[in-house]
Length: 350
Ligand SMILES: [Zn+2]
Image 1: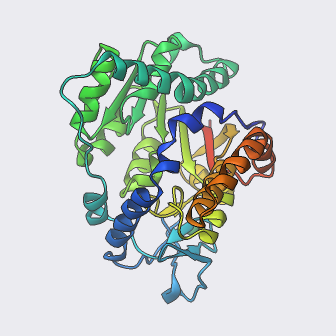
Image 2 (image 1 turned 45 degrees about the vertical axis):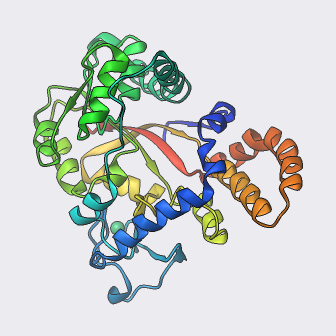
């Protein structure tokens, strides 16, 4: 077990931000079904995404579980949870479609941007900076590259907390433009997918972050190899989706949107598979923060099912009784190591 493990955070503010999940169940479910269609077109996975051990029915394995038309296998070597079909380039080209971004942004957009950054990303950034400070790395000495930086929320948060040398790379040009406009500075650079491994392999940075990114990378081996070989990099900060309570809630509620397993999440991490990956690249766990959305997922699924059953009034009553318990219930899940997400800082072994 790690030296530093922290659990839980309040989800109160995040419920407002994620209200789409409650109101647009059918729409989200349809989107997820399209993404599943794209995965079902691909060849079957023959080896584990993390340790490359043979996997799947052809390797003589039993299905761990099925949800939304997809079977999942547990790797007997590293414990990683792999979907039956492979997340390859063709899959990525079908599911990662660039969102439409407006050319002109309003003051309202900036407000929303800053609220999202401050609510969701400042705590993630603070966790990293506190842990690095404890290890003797001060803000002025941090040089950070954020891979898959999206709209730049994490880079923006890190800079907001006083790290000057923090930049991000991102494939989507509209997202890069959006991020740079919102921040009034070129905090992100647009890069093409085939160039990312070499950028990471030669970056003059001591910290690399992947916030909600590793699970989406089709050539994960190349990216991890590049980090391993870049000896400037002392720390990696990542968050990934875990095989957790949310997966089981989803498997039990097939008329509800599957936020966690399925869609663009084609494989899920476990404590064991993270430990395997960390060791394989010559790093070790340094600090971990576990907090999930499992109970919020359960809450949403029960609400959606009540609506579907003509029990909208009961849903209201359920919400007023259940929401005040949400943080406490999730804290129990987190402490039992069953949370849907993990944030981990790993350090290069000396
Ligand atoms: Zn494996």
